Amino acid sequence: MSLDTITASVSVELGEYARLPRVLVGVSLGALLALGVASRTPGAASTCVLVAQSPAGLARLHPGPVSDGAIRALLASGGAVDERALADADVVGELVRRVRADFSIVGEGDLPAARERCRADVSYVCGDADPLVPVGELAKWHGFTEGAVNGSVVRGGHFAAFDPDNSGPVAAAFSVAVRGAMVKSGREK
Image (cartoon, rainbow, N blue to C red; front, side, top):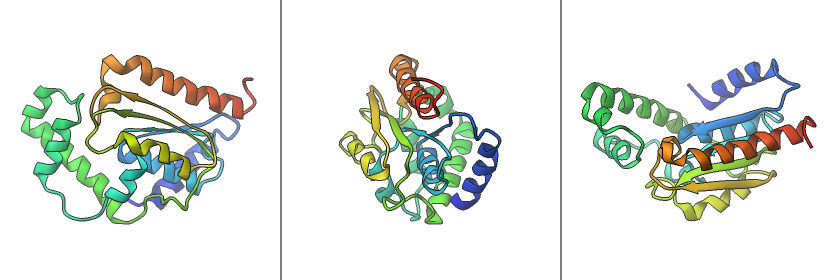
């Protein structure tokens, strides 16, 4: 599957809701896909919520071989993946398969580039100890949008947004994004 295919599919789905405020949400590679859809489809969303991703992720991702061990290490270091799940070979096998599928999209070279600026606002949520998302890179989201950028850094690793201890800051980030979409649509002042 390519970003063009995903964009076309999302555009069709969003067309049914053209008069409503829309927020695209993506986690990890999904955040890059959400940004790509917003960049390639003007009006697709007034806000993107990008979880566990930074602009540095665009430069770091490449189609080169990634071992199953490296993917397992990411899952283990990311946080919020239950230790019992990580001990189950079938669960880990399925997670590795899904991460590989994400990487295949990267291999197609379809991810958004800095030249593909979108008009949507960007809200981000990232873990302070995420091995893939350097906190110092987060301000660079300004280079990917003509809209406003705001975000939250919470305690934890790559999957910190799913940690119940972070539910307050994560909910606040989503609230800001939805409120911004409502204001932009004229539904709220």
